[in-house]
Structures are given as structure tokens and as C-alpha cells.
Image (cartoon, rainbow, N blue to C red; front, side, top):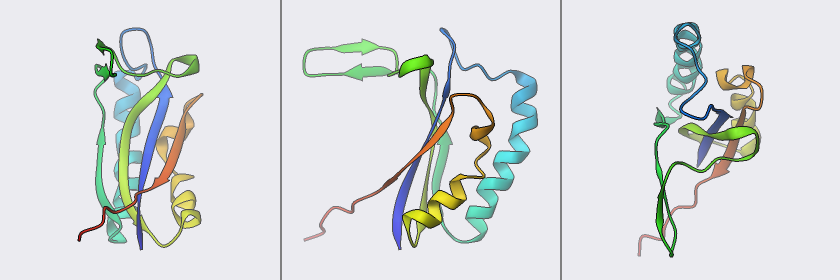
Amino acid sequence: MKEYLLLFRNSTGAEGYLTKTEDMANDMPLWQGWIGQIAMQGKLISTAPIEFAGSIVSKEAATEGAHREAEHVMVTGYLICKGDSLEEVRELSKACPILKYPNSSVEIRALIPFPTN
């Protein structure tokens, strides 16, 4: 069984996430149910939302702010889970609550373990 990183992306505003208080209240049971199903299968390793503020460090400098893609899309959270295949994790991801928002996505990446010798 491999471990997979799921990156949740969503559109953002200039000063913060676009999620309204009522959206958060409505979405929380959906997230709890979706993550709960993964956990009940014994496949959840870790998950968390990510703060809006951040810093980008390059060889030249460190700047304030998080990386944004086109349409002001940025990573808003993550989940690490176990799966037998990419296809299995892709199927789990199709029910992710983030997908109800325009410009949202779930990126799935297999994690490569470091050698232990």
C-alpha cells in the first residue's frame, strides 16, 4: 500500500479565502463525513486546512504571501492517505467537498519513502 498526498486547491480573494461563515457551517459535516469514511477504512494518515498567509523562499529572497496560480487559485488544505492504487485514491477524491466550488481541484501525488539504510 502506498501513501498519497492530496492537495486541495480553490479560488481565493485578495485578502483571504472566499469561504463565507455559512459555507463553512454547511461544508463542515460534508468534510467530516468524507474524511471519516477514509479514516474508517484505516487509510487516513493526516489532514488539515492551510492558513491563507505564507512565505515563499527562493535562493534569492524570501517574500510574504503564498503561491497563487491563475484565477487566484491556491492550495487551501491537504490530506495524506494510504491506498492500493492511484485509481483507488482518485475514486475517493471524486467525493471531496472542495469540488463543489468553481476552479477547485484535488491533486493526487504518490509519496516516495526515503531509503532507511
